[in-house]
Length: 74
Image (cartoon, rainbow, N blue to C red; front, side):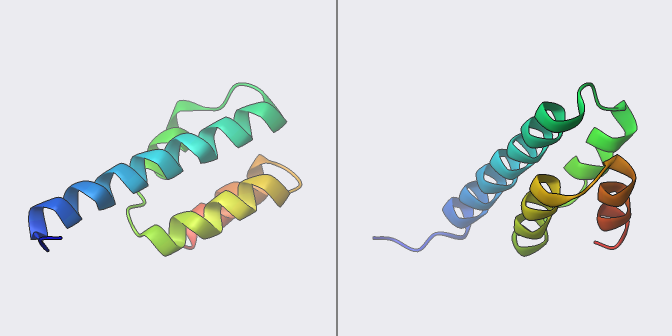
């Protein structure tokens, strides 16, 4: 397989988009409608490891304030 920086970048962008969508889905399922600014904060995170942590936090946080705190630390 050819190692292309462009292909790596596109795959990384797709992984981030998927993680953003997954986080939003989990939060909406648990807490209902989300404030638009929270979605923007989530979408501003582009580090894949941080996003993995946010997926876990979305699934386990007791409320949206706790999740917001986690996003603020990224």
